[in-house]
Length: 146
Figure 1 (cartoon, helix red, strand yellow):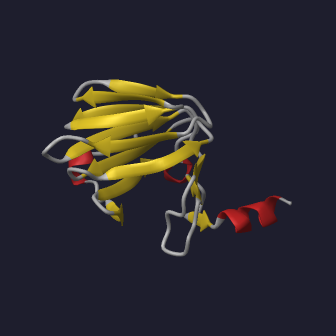
Figure 2: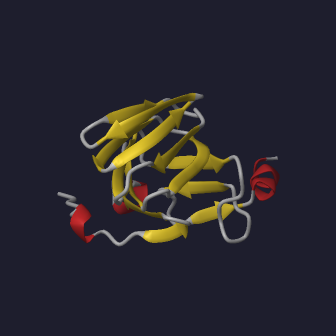
């Protein structure tokens, strides 16, 4: 049985006020699901992007503004938003304290494509659940698929 204690998950800072971890995915042994653990400081945000898999975003703590496919709403602890596959979406902590969001993907591997560069080298495409972490620029992704 695979067990994850979210209280012990180390998150990786990836932007101002944003840290994430992917505790469950194909490389950890799942066949059909994955998760993302998101830590947002006040004002911190997950930039706009689209994921290849449907995602459920469950707010564990705090208040976040979610934008999904052009529709924006505020979610509090205990609420969730459904993000269809390939729908542009973003999150922002609108509260005065830290927020935690647990995302559930309907697939053990997911490809995230950001509208703006996200990684240290301008990466916009990230593969979650690959045997090795993969992050490439959009131009490299197009070259790889051509």
